[in-house]
Length: 337
Image (cartoon, rainbow, N blue to C red; front, side):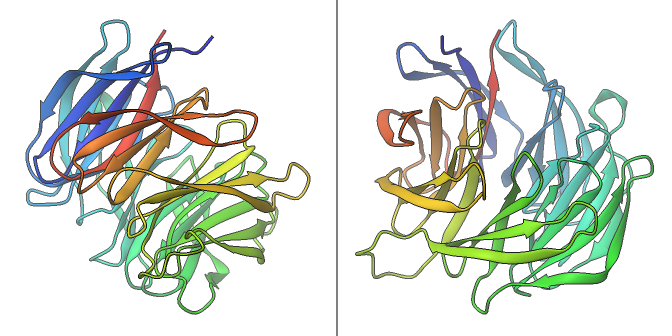
């Protein structure tokens, strides 16, 4: 039986985080709380124990705000606010729950900060990247980190020591991507032997192999995410794997679509399964933990779309649309007990 979820939506232009309840049985969304934090709120990351949500403010004062979760009461409480070294386009937390990673598009860097008691975040260790760092992802082993440089057309590759929070570039520290990719967001599969990368500039999804012993990578496959008849400028945004790893979804902001792909169980390669119209300018989206619903943030529709996922085919069906704040751009979900 499908469980209800809390849905957190950061809204950049209204400076708030909207907390919604997803009623799985009825296919509806309802607002239960609005946290007004001020400034340009964008990326979010949930701690592995699902007890704390971290939200980055990209305007002055640059900061990460820690929010405590109470799933029993469907409530969220602000815990603390800590400084960030730059305006961050992406947040991520390692598997130990001890380290916060962030990537700065404008400052061309990634940072590592310790997560402290009471929602506080410690002093940053900063690492320069190629132009326009856009995200980091931690390998399932918690021993590797990849960072995407959109303007540099490459991935930065680091060994990661979870005891000290140290990032060490590999002997060959960068992995070049095809000209015009604009590496934006990426995901490891559960086994850690495949990387799925979405290009912002080409709106294509690139599949790479990953050797967890050496960190070696090789490009295996590239597929378009745009609908066949779309003739506008590509503007790739986000990608996510379903919790069971069977489906990969990507969003594209100028066609206002989400594309779906079946993931081959043996090779990790992709096969297209469809495109679906979604909310206007879908910058961010998320799947619920059970994989039965996909939620899309429409930046210019100022609404969240709730879509049912057909677990047999991967197809999406719109169930509801719910108004939130201005310029919603990031979504995180949490299953309720």
